[in-house]
Image (cartoon, rainbow, N blue to C red; front, side, top):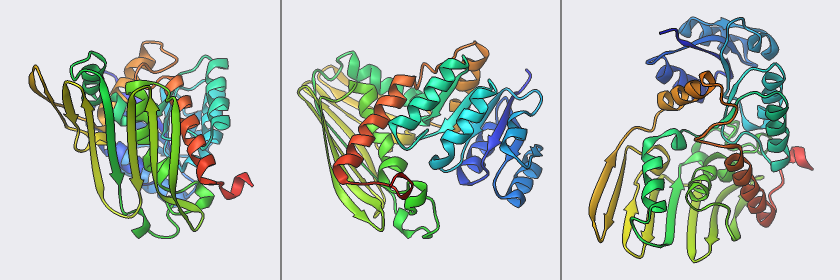
Length: 318
């Protein structure tokens, strides 16, 4: 089988991690662009790719099937529009933008160019999350009353020059990790009837927040932080409970219900994500079934509202 050919924009940690994973399957990286030319050359050498001096040259690499954008999210708009206007399918790291206005520009561009565009949310390309969604929406735990998600990692221990800690790159907990629990809730219950957000801002970024989303009688409490290391997800219904310990990269989900217990094992990995995206592109799809445009836009809209309530404005927005 001929391998699916990727152009990489960005050569940082996420690019390295995905590259290592996808090369175990029917994928190859044929071109790379990074603002740091030395890193681009090193990445190209490691993966048998061609390093280019500009993103436009990399995107124009002959025979490329799609572009993967793995740069800080403040540059996603620029590179997404560049690839879409060249009519090259795009898989863009989450979040694809920093506001709904940016997301709308990208989605409109994808539609205008009739070109595939998807947010790289590995959680929702995984059979574990899809199984949980089936359990919930098929009523296996009855009417859902609550969902509690804790997601934290010690981002404040990273260098002050890290994109996670810099307001100039829209750092902070919400856009970097908050997108996972918010998207999880959205994919289970739709757009919330009510959004409440409280949190702490320090040095221009949100270091922690609690987001409460209400969907009718269902209440979701999402706790995100850059101060510690913690991850859990519990969904409680009138007839049972679902637990996903490492929900954003789950390998297992467990359900206890009045009809018995059930455990599902599966993978949440980059190879599955990239393979399913490649399959959609080869099938001629212009929008992902796993992460549709509506999900990407609505979840960004929720995060916009959270930022509004926090009073969080990035330097480039002032």
